[in-house]
Length: 80
Image 1 (cartoon, one colour):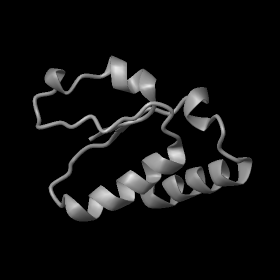
Image 2 (cartoon, rainbow, N blue to C red):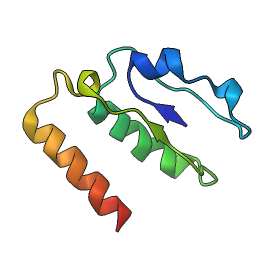
Image 3 (cartoon, rainbow, N blue to C red):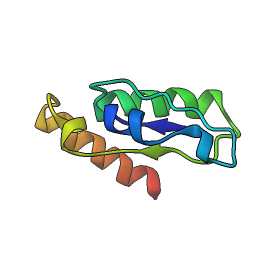
């Protein structure tokens, strides 16, 4: 599963992956929406192996500092 903003939408093509891959990117998509999609599809797709998430300045634009901090804390906690 490929997530991120329009940079990822235009730059990463599922055609170049050996595994079944879906690009569910949307222009102006923020990391908060990416987190929502990850939470949703991780439950619906038990065989999901990889998530490609582009994070850059543009994906943070318009996201409040508190929301950004919570997003990264949740990501770090998910690794443990």
